[in-house]
Length: 479
Length: 146
Image 1 (cartoon, rainbow over the protein chains, first blue to last red):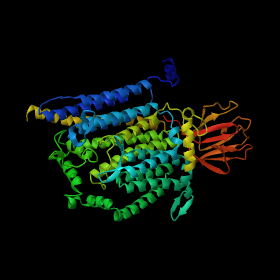
Image 2 (image 1 turned 45 degrees about the vertical axis):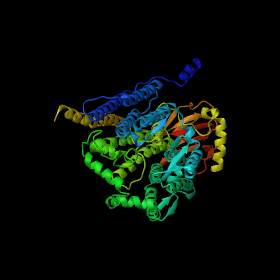
Image 3 (image 1 turned 60 degrees about the horizontal axis):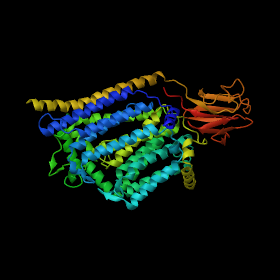
Image 4 (image 1 turned 180 degrees about the horizontal axis):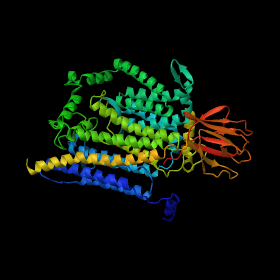
């Protein structure tokens, strides 16, 4: 006990009030409470509170995390957590509202439905968020082993490619015993860590642009190749698995990070040209891409087949209108299932837009914009290039993913199946997005030790000396 | 319209309206942060943090604000004077040129080192990189955030 308290003192833990965060969390609690009241009252046909265990449990969890932040006294961003908590709260309400038998899992003798499962995943996700935000004090473990991280990511994807299950036409689910997960969710974070590490190290060289091809000035090719190769491998595997959403996300994040690191618009133009050329080739070669583009241009020509989902979503926006139908009142069912396939994952935005209306949907989009602002602010005030690029990449992963799927749902861009961060149902997506926001919070902490130079031995290395040597061997073999 | 339908309608609108109250509260916080940021604009381009100085000067952990052009050396006419017995009179030059920082050696006796590599000619460097002149090791960092 004395050792523990001495350790706490050494770490300099002094409680630090977070009034702004508390105020925003109170608003989140109000929103969830009013939403719950409106949902239960509509279902019961009279003013009714019902069994409010699930929303109350969620709000208690948020409070516990807030108190943990206060006690540990980290001076982190106070807006990111309430923003994520609001999205999670809306997600919980929507999942409780949707038919519970969309997803069912039996644990022991209890059968859990959609709402309880989502509550479980949300809780785990926020616990991961809080743990990372509080415990991560050094980024050395991310900074140093960038090639190892990249190898882990590629290894995960290969595993999926060899042993993965096909769900909805895409091979992206990996089953280990009773657990199933989607490694492409984790890969996006690993890719960001690798790109941030590589770009921070070679930023000045990449920006200098010494090779000339026509009007374009490119960096020395040797410095661009490892990065392009890494990206190409990831992309190729993803296309083989026909996970188009993830491929699009990786490519956009890659381009944006390259631009942020070098401030060269010529790279972006080159990348977009390559993207258009690649899309043209894929349109001819991959039937899935062709189908997605066709139903994007004219879904009504395929109303009973591939365009069915998007057309049902378009009807939903129409029914919702500006103010929405109110929670519980929308989403007509055909038989026992909602008329929009995958409403709880890829098309959750349609459910939101119907029941909360255009105003509610716009508010949720604005919350993603808030997350973007906070993330980029953390990047802009970071102490060094690696942290700045890491914060930028982590932010981009969340908001670009939201943009891709919302754009797809609204028929602004071709539809690619991907989750809406913090709102869609799904364990992998929630856990990874929780980890992303947790890392952003850790990066925003003004009390974190300065980034260590590569040559200095750090505590974390001494503790994990054996792991380090193994990692070092792998690293030298790879680079 | 009976009382129940009316209260349900109010609840429905309150649910959406509260989201905008949340956004308003966030917006106000963002606006305040932005104003603080604007007030502290025009600060230094970066800083050098002293990582190691065996002779005690400059003090380890202290930070030196940087201009666009910084000369390092033992002579008092340098913009950053480093009083270490292995540092030459005019030792090195650290410059910010539009997009990136560059370091060059000014013919010093013991050389200038970037991340353990000897600097020959002009070398680019980024935030987080380490320069060594004489026995003194300095890390380039972004200017502290407000």
